[in-house]
Amino acid sequence: MSADALKTTPLHDLHLALGAKMVPFAGYSMPVHYADGIIAEHRHCRTRAGLFDVSHMGQAFLVARDGADPAAAIERLVPGAIATLKPGRMRYTVLLNDAGGIRDDLMVTRTAEADGRLFLVVNAAVKDADFAHISDALADAAVLERLDDRALLALQGPRAAAVLGEMVPEVCDLVFMQALDASWRGVPLAISRSGYTGEDGFEISLPADAAETFARTLLEHPDVAPIGLGARDSLRLEAGLCLYGHDIDETTTPVEADLVWAIAKSRRERADFPGAAHILKQLAEGPARRRVGIRPGDRTIAREGTPVRDAKGERVIGRVTSGGFGPSIDGPIAMGYVETALAEPGTGLMLEIRGKLRPAAVAALPFVPHRYVR
Image (cartoon, rainbow, N blue to C red):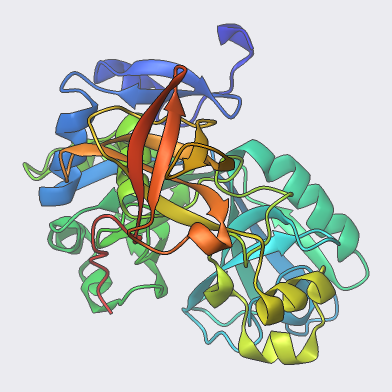
C-alpha cells in the first residue's frame, strides 16, 4: 500500500513531531519507534509508563433492538460468558467460525452506565470484516454502532496509575478488567484498567479531536514516554499474549491456542457457540497441537515461520508464530505450535534457522510475570 493510501490516526501529527519512524500497519501509518529505539522504549514501559496510540483498533457499541440485553446476541458468536458481566466489567473473548477457528479476539465491556450497551474493541486488520460479520449475524437482534470518531490510547507500566490518577483520580479505584466513564476538562472518557503489555495500565477511549491534547498532557509527565509498535510487540511477546493473524487465526481453535480459560463453563455445558462440537471434542480428547513458549538455546532469533523440529532434528513438529528479542530477559524468545506430546515445558527442540539446526526448549508462558492489579 502506498504512503498516500494509508489511513492516519488522530495522533499522526504528534508522532511526526516526536520524531517517530512511521511504517504501514493494518492499513495505517503507525509509529514503530521513536528516537530512543525499541529496547529503550520497552524498558521504559516495564519500569515507568509508556503511552501507546492504538486508535487504529476498531471500537463499537452493540445495542439490542428491543431494548433488552445485547449480551444474549453476542453470545451467539463467542464462547465467553458475556451475559453475566456486571456494569463496568470487561471480558476477553474470541469470535469463532463454524469450525471453531478464531476469526478475531476482542474485548467486550458492559458500560459502567448500565445503559444496555456493550462496548467492543477489535483488531485493526480485521475490524471491517468483524463489524460486518457481527452486524449481519445479529441483524435480527442488535445494532452495531461503529465509533470511528473515537481515538484509543493505552498508558502502560508501573507508574501508569499514579500518572493518570493526577488527571482522572477515580481511575485509581479500578482493578484489572474494570471500566468507568469519566471526564477530563469536559472531555468524555471511557477508561478500562487493561492493556496488552502484561503490566498494570489503562486504555482510554475519547473523542478524536481531543486525543492530541490529552496525549500531550500525559507526555508532559516525566514518567511518561511515547512507545511504538516495535516495543508493543516485544512487550506482549514477553507477556505471552497472542497477536491475531500470527499466533491465532481461523485455522486455530481456542483449545490449541491455550485460551481454554476464555471458554466459560456455562457455555461448555450449553454447547451453544460456533464450532462447539469440535472445540468440546478437543477439550475432552486433547488437541493435536498446542501453543507454547520457546527459548532458543543460544542468541539466535527465531522469527515467524521458523520450523520447529524434535530434539534430534529428525521431524518437523510445529512452527514459530512470533519471535524476537526479549529485553526484560536479555535473550531471544518465541511462541509457536508444537505437537501436544512435546508441549511440556523443558522439552528439548531444534529450530531450523537459515538451514541450520539450533537448540531450543519449550518454555512456560508468560516469559515475564503479569503485574495486573486485581
